[in-house]
Length: 353
Length: 154
Image (cartoon, rainbow over all chains, first blue to last red; front, side, top):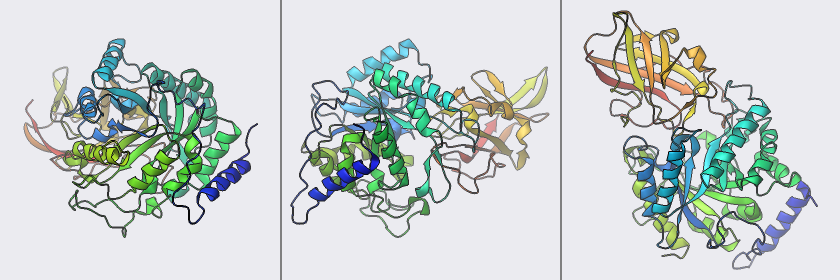
């Protein structure tokens, strides 16, 4: 039976209400999601797992780092005996996208094996503004581009696509919503996604709040059309950001940040709290572990990582968290040590170290 | 390999046709964090030693194909991959003198996942000296002015 949006919200509210009873020491975990095949090998460990989006290394990519250099770096982050998750951006990291050669694909698989890497998420875009700022592409053209990306993602072994379709609306950015034919384009590709085991995930990212008109539109569509997991959610931890990152000129590794000067496009910090994810866990099949600043004690100073990882661990999240570094020292080679520090932090928080 | 700055020195030279110097060429790499279709480009503008070149004076060569800026706007299915620069061909009879020149390239592009923000121009405005400066730096979120001193030898 398809759940109406009202029923979904009532259920979610009831669950959230039951968990949030005053006096309870910790949220009671939801029952594990049985039967939800996450698309990973049967041997995959349970619980949240670590990965990296090599977007983080974009400053050096093609200048002093090749794709292989990035994958080699990732192998230094993997716990011995396990694999580290990988996210690529399709039109940045795939040679001759959208038509990589078979020789390149052969080498791709060899490198993944050599560096203990599991393919997790394929970041791609449906550029609705392909020809115009104001008129989106035809739905048919959008569906064709989306299907081509799903097939390429599957060919490279990815089980998730971070599918970015167009947005509309102007200022303030917190009020922007999906473009008119966003959902039509997604509908046209659902069958292909399921056939190829690729989950299309829309990313919830600043300045989109976890509760608001855009989320309502997504959850309306997901529940009415019963699309989970073939169209579902990726949560970017930027929505939980509570403090501003160090501004240009400040010491990048100094603890803290100023909450005072928030750029207007970000809206009010925070846009969400980690507990807001609890009713959404069945719909979340990947996360972006966004971060802005690591101290030398390997703590993140702008986003509540301990609380975020605890919610994911306690409530049955079995997917990956893909590091995305946006610190200002990226321009001075800061991404490489920052991602390492973040993984030390995540290992500690997950009880792996 | 590519140089760190968006404006490349490798590729900077005068251009000849039928024995006549018709202009000069600048190689430019995209420092945007992803590759895009050529049609998302809002155009290239060039400023050299204070001389502003109009949009029509600049054609764009990518993977051996030449595009006017109008043709660029229609190239929806040509991917500008990040490991390849574009070569900007700038018409200037007689070309540039040998020696050091201050070169600014301005570039911008449409972004589909951000709704239309007020005040954002439809086409790339004229280049203005400045940008990340001669030591480079990424403009990972959308182009802009990049100024660099380049040496022309031929």
